[in-house]
Length: 130
Image (cartoon, rainbow, N blue to C red; front, side, top):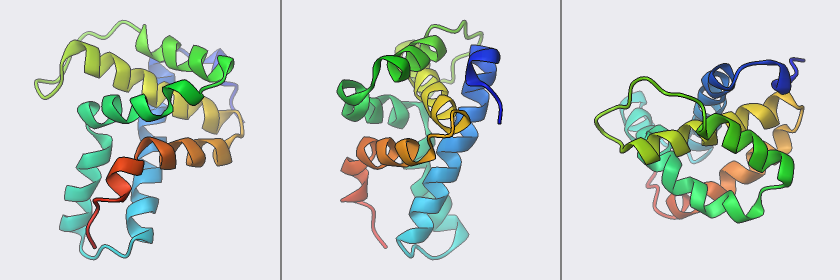
């Protein structure tokens, strides 16, 4: 297992992007949503920078000191390009969000990652149609 404290913030966010994508796909499949097109449309509600920034609000007060440090490490990482679909603040928060999930996963805290994912997106879980 990789030590999340020994990789760069940028690499942490890169890996975290995959973790969030994996948790999103797992969640959507568990809802019984059929069809790859529909799954991809629903997934965008979870993985876009704007969605991640909004989801962060649901978990920020619940983070431990170490988790908050991982988030801040990703958030404060220098970013060279920001997508047109998000503001700079949203994109930086989303990068921190991804870094947090990478930190948890690489630390062997998959259950905590799943718990925070569920809480972060609880507002979407109620709206997602099957």
